[in-house]
Image (tube, rainbow, N blue to C red):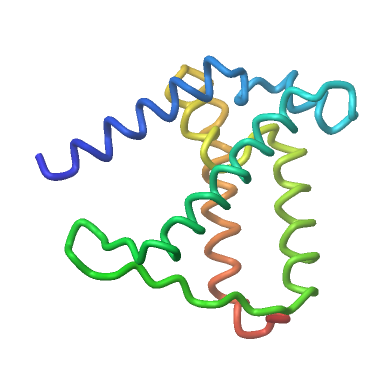
Length: 137
């Protein structure tokens, strides 16, 4: 019962992404070919809201539901990790046509081929865990 709120938030998130066509392979294809502003608008809106949310958390020293102050550790300023990680993420997104959130949403809408993508993503996550200490950080 405690986790039902997370289930409902996830369902709401999935409905929003389906209705905004953010999980549409054609919209993602348009984005990678720079033919439409649609996906850039969605991603830009998410980044903008994230910036405002983090700013509000820091400004008002927001506490979690457990009463603890939310602490956001400073990011490591390494460029190589972001270029390498972003390139791998982008290639995976381009190959699969979906980033991690929409993979599960597409599975929920009946696109069962996403099971292959989810399996590959889990395998990639496992490989990262094994190789983490050998990668540039």
